[in-house]
Image 1 (spheres, rainbow, N blue to C red):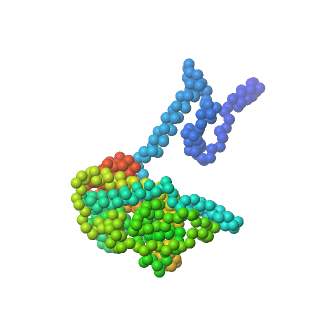
Image 2: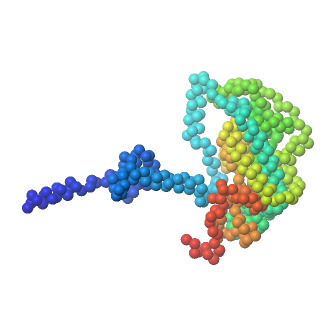
Amino acid sequence: MAAACNGVIAHFSSSAPRSRPHLRNPRGFDPEHVSRSFLGFSKRNLTASVPFSLKRDGQSEETSKDALLSSDTSHSSVIKKYERHTQNVDLPPILPKNKKKPYAIPLKKMQRAAKRDKKLAEMGIEKPLEPPKNGLLVPDLVPVAYEVMDYWKVLIRGLSQLLNVVTVHGCSKCPEIHVGPVGHEIQDCHGTGSEQRRSYHSWVRGSINDVLIPIESYHVFDPFGRRVKHETRFNYDRIPAVVELCIQAGVDLPEYPSRRRTAPIRMLGKKVIDRGGFVEEPKPYRSEDCMALLAELDTFEVLKGQSPQPSDRRRLAERTLKAYSTVRRGVRQLMRKYTVKACGYCSEVHVGPWGHDVKLCGAFKHQWRDGKHGWQDATIDEVIPPNYVWHVRDPNGPPLTSSLKSFYGKAPAVVELCVQAGAEIPESYKPMMRMDIVVPDCDETRLVA
């Protein structure tokens, strides 16, 4: 009897399943393991690991494997479709003013590049440079620069006319702006006297500079020549950074000449050993010619006089929105090759291989830097700030309130202005504007999960 019992115990112990391998998750569930097992496998791995239990009656093993493969392909296509058309995206974060901006290029990558250049300099090997880092133009980007310049003029002209039909409000105590017939009632003002106003904004009539924030840069004849010093800063003109980027990318403007090199510069580490000598900047054109050109390239003339009323409001809004998208796309394409520097503490921008030496930074800890800027690589939002505003679905409806702030979306001021003027909402801005969210009434807020 004991022998029989021992035989039965031995039989069950031999047929019992082996212990499961240890999973990294202490609760026995590893999301990375599941995602690799069901979403990231190849056909070869699948055919080797398909269990025999997947076969149905009258169905071969290859057919069952193909069915599982087709179901996985459809599942991955749904995931890719969701990634292309996101439902909602987070609103843009507000960076603190008591910290430096994050680097556009990872710090480790810049350190590796600097170490590589230093090693080449110690060996006496010149730094390998390609256009436009060596002072030469990139022929393929010259048409892009001209296109950006043309659409920049269209953008300024269109915004100046749309401001006559769409009202823009700006807070007189803080940088907040609002596009709509009346200002919103969201209590998020942190300006002077906000405690007495219970954080309500003090709205006044806005201008084109509130919608399209003017970012200017020094125009230099030779970007690789002498730097702009604090004592000589008044010898250089200040023009929009987009225009200066287009000039350095190949656009020829007689009022703002630029040096076109035929021989590349040579650098050994951080030192320029051959720049082709210093060339004196040609005498500037008459001030009347420069002012006539700035009337098309800058927003200053728009502030001085009223623009005519648009004849076709919707068509003008569509053309202005297209110009805005084209300018941002072209500037992003130019910035992949041409260097643009931005201060890590304030909004100063300089187009060129290195920043200027003007001591006018008044941001966080400027006393420690003697007013000098903390230069780093710029981003597209620093050259063309989007200036996000709250999206108003019904301009004729009630004003936006603080209780429903979590249901509202945001959009760049130019996009919101064109949409309220009659333009169709672009697909790329719909997730941030939260078009698929139903805004409840104030009485229904407590019932929303």
